[in-house]
Image (tube, rainbow, N blue to C red):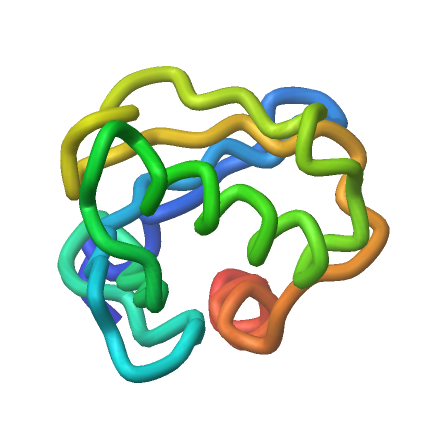
Length: 104
């Protein structure tokens, strides 16, 4: 496995840091596959005034079982390239579990 495919996320203590490649205006909300050092996340919201990012945060909060307000957008609020900090996720989507097992 290439190094770039391994580093779309990392842990800083109990905080999960994730690099995201967002795709607004999608047909459904879905966590896709890693693309280089980013994880593709598609959402149905339009990219207008940060609405797609807000929608993505609500979607990801459900996926990680955390409150939407706990997810911090480090950069990329108005851009498809984002970095998020997710404190104490109670659940990890499958792509994170697969990547973690490959690293062990």
